[in-house]
Image 1 (cartoon, rainbow, N blue to C red):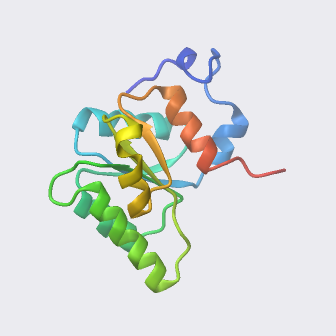
Image 2 (image 1 turned 60 degrees about the vertical axis):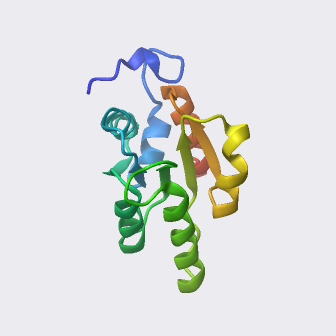
Length: 151
């Protein structure tokens, strides 16, 4: 996918070199059952310089999170096989049991945040991104949870 640079950061230069270098070597897991949303999120995140693993259901997300290390997880709430709430709950249980550091998990849903936040928070999700999201909103989420290292 070719993302027009003038849609990023409100400028015509794309992501700043500081943002791109901060993203380098940072890994994001995208769990989204909708093909278009999954490809779009993956392409945008890779354009920003992140390393992305995209999966299409909660079971695949859970397996990936238990086997690999990620800096951020974007988790659709309603997916087949295992929904995002259950996958998150199981990831949090494993982190607690194994003593691993808590990976930030951002809920992705087409539902209004006010209606879903209590459920998201109860299973251990840290933030929320409502669909359809913009490039700027996705960039804001990554900036919030994966800030650029201080130089």
